[in-house]
Image (cartoon, rainbow, N blue to C red; front, side):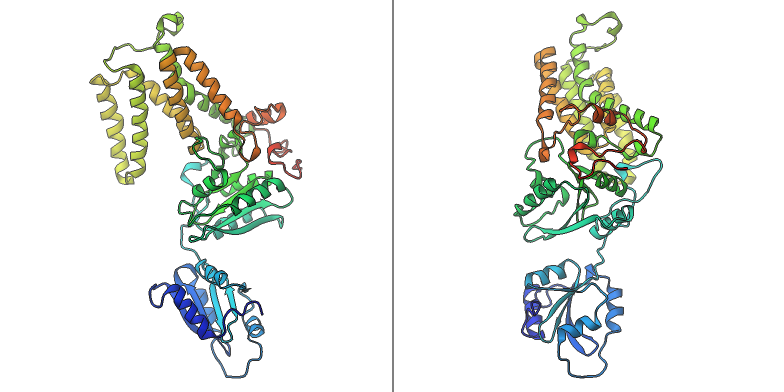
Length: 480
């Protein structure tokens, strides 16, 4: 038999004690038990299994009367045939299965089995803070890969939905599931992804999905995100039905969606929880916020430093009170100051966050104006730019826009209007050149697909939305 990995139960016990250390870890259980008349060795991690289920099951299988057992492999399957038994072909697979939360059994003759008793510790599904909606489901992904798969499966009750399980990294052996619709997924995208997984050679993915993203996409120092993260099962289910691929990483409450474009990163579930017209208006406001977040501060600086060239109707732009600190430096300090406040808010305990907000908003802001550190106009336009940045639904994209804003501001400060327009063109050209997974990042704007672009800007009624995105390469484009 291929699952007879040891010469005896004692040999298996000695191997497990050598691997885990005899008495070195309190949570490793290596205990002889009975399956009716068959003596077996149970090996499991107490913190990763449902101890109540293990206790109840083994209590009902305890020893009754001795009799000769001819085939231990068949006997085990006959009496233990309702808990997801898996025959194990290598010792490494047996140890990895135990460390993944399954219960391993070794018989007297050395036959080995893994049974499904996993019960990972973690939160219950809750609505994610960064993807809230006024109306809609309140569940969200947790740090448990089994729960996350179940939340998706509940929304797509199709046998075509696949969850392919992999273990990534040499020491961490992180569980990763690739999810897709078998009747829709682009085989080239799936093959590309599997080849990237095969090339991962690292000891552990402690940062979970983010570490995996950098290995898969070789992002290096590109500021823009190449995947979409979501903590909402309904969003992931919607993308799977469009032909996208979802990557679920154990211990992470976020699911990666690929392939995506910049316009995918600007979508929000709230658009589809409102009437089509309202959803279209919300989407338009979000696109305006992205553009404004990028250009409003450099553009105001350009106007403020060239007031003589402005028409009379724009004469209010500029700084009314002179300061010893250059205007460019004021803008940089104010914008960086807001970033420091954001970082402080992340590290501040909730009971103290209100006090920190009062200090930042009233004392620092107003006093900085009174002492002449900032002009009131600088505070105003910095706050407006920050407001537009916060309106971007994707956090990674909002940070990238802030980086581009400072590059554009620096170029404007050095080269005036020439720097502003040339740098704006270079940023646009750079984004156009990006092709993660060989998918144009600005599709359907570049290359230009008029009908697809119309659907990007207008939230059509669901009954009219009958085509899957061209860039996913789905086997079936029509949805109805």
